[in-house]
Amino acid sequence: MTSDWEVPAPSCALDVSMNDGAVLSVRRYGNTEGPRIILSHGNGLASDAYYPYWSQLVRQFDLFIYDYRSHGLSSAGDRRLHNVPTFLVDLDNILQAVAEQFGYKPPIGIFHSLSAVVALLLSQERGGFEALVLFDPPICPPGGLPADMEGVSTRLATQASRRRPRFESRAELADLMRDIPAYRGFKPGVVDLLVAAITRPVEGGGFELRCPKEYEAQAFAYFFGWAIQIDLERISCPVKAIGADPTRRFSFMPSMNLSVLDNLDYDFLPGTTHFLQMEEPDQCAALTVGFLQKRGLV
Picture (tube, rainbow, N blue to C red):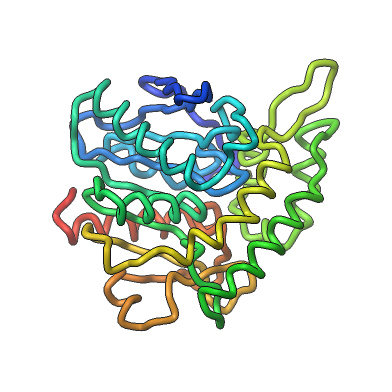
């Protein structure tokens, strides 16, 4: 596996304007004749950082990746609207815009962390996905109950609020991240890829986080209240949940109910954390394709 990752230019880029003026960046890759995939990222991250994973899907799939508002290549939005209800509307608008621009195909959703919660909430509200592949969806913490998510959310919000917002260079941030346990399992070069995706140059020198720490903290602070509203029995499409190692501290489980896990087609990857797509992209891609093949969607 390469240690020098560079995200190629998309075959097409689409800027989708929201009603409040925020503009979300959507990029198209892959096989335009294949099944359609809509893919997005976790809180504070960006879809380009998942390239080691999604690059393995482009041969078979018509892949659309997008960045949340105030993340990645999307524009900054109003902080007052940086919340799950807004993210739901944004995802709905993305699905409609892609269908209008490129013709309708039933979309397969691939989402990680916070974006997985948003996709599940949209699915139980109105459907719209042919299938969902969700990576470490933050619905229930390991060894706990869904209500315990409030404590997890508070801890993550506090951590986000303490982030350094600016750095002299991307190498400085990458070196700092490599010393943090949560990032030590990344494949070679992927920390640098992540840093490139989540920072931008600042006039006068240096780099800043694309997602301001106040925005990231706000999303973490309130997502628990939405996560516990998810009713998996209301999701009509097939769902694959691929989790981190439940014995690791930085991981989630989709449920504590074994029957629910069975209905979800749940797998976990031993030794991985919440960032499993960046730690084991090959295994994550193989599980994704295997699930879609089993469901007759490839």
